[in-house]
Image (cartoon, rainbow, N blue to C red):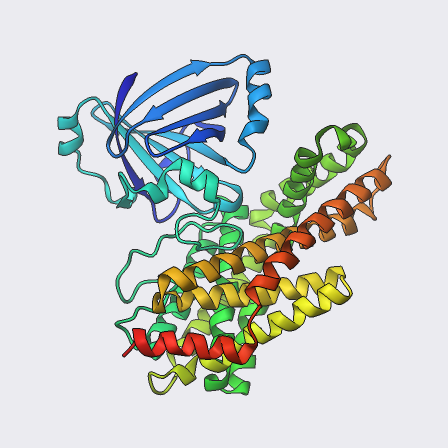
Length: 469
């Protein structure tokens, strides 16, 4: 095996230095992973490789074998559930060093990881990273590609359908959790302000990659609104409604661009799942239409999209002033209890309705309530990380399944407007996949919402008292 010496960094944003650098699209899937070795497939441009890596940290052993297309395609289905997509940019750093800037896509959209390979350990030690490389994560398993491919969520369960930020910051940062050594009013205000700041920052990157920037901003706005719902009673109904409306409307201004992207991705996922059962030839005109709409939305960064981004940015800026004026009172369980119990009770009710009479609208409503619970449990996770982390993961899994169900409903509605050769065959596959997703979601929901809301509240209150004594 050849030895490679690398250092890895997480960039805060996609570096402008890499914008014009040579780039290649990469698909990567893992055949096997254990504590010492990983076996992966990679498709990069026209190249197909099988790679075995061993070891951890800065220095690792690696062997690569080139594959014929037929060999690669025969093995690729074995990586299902352990895949990722990214675009790699190669940027010279001087002194013969090259930075490989990986911008991730799909559920990991927004994550930018930079790797620098060195000819020797001495060269690695003497390297002084330029500031744009960001925080070093060499040896951190959370940022290993195999972890990202298998978890798909990025790191700490952050994110909607996968997020990219690991909370390794100190107070004053945007980490999405309430630290045990900060007061609840201070922490919740910090968390909300951090989401607004991140959403604003991502909208400033629309010209670099509109779809990724808008997707990230919308996720941050949803997280911010979950904080608002958590402290709704303390804010007062009038203030809550005004602030929730502001951030909701900002997110809606950005929805069209993301919707175009989701339809393309959902159709591709449907085809991949059903393989030969999917009428590929019949769906091709529809796929081309969706692709054109996606590219048109992305290319409109200087037109209508730019105007809506500018309007959303102004709304977020105005909302940040309101967040700074919060007066949340004393550091008390009563600050978060009503909002958390409401999220849990609403989820119980939504589960019962879906189980009784499933509908696309009911599933979508349940998804929103599951997301509220997921976000709020992440905020409170430090009360007992092992227990609440597991519960938050269940809520995350539930929200993901319900989100996929909703994306299929959106795709089905779009199908009704198209002149497709075999719409019925595609419609049946959509319904079949929705039924699979809903069955899995109900099974998770019955475990997640097994307690009565009052019993759930008493349990979390006990954690609060012990952790924050």
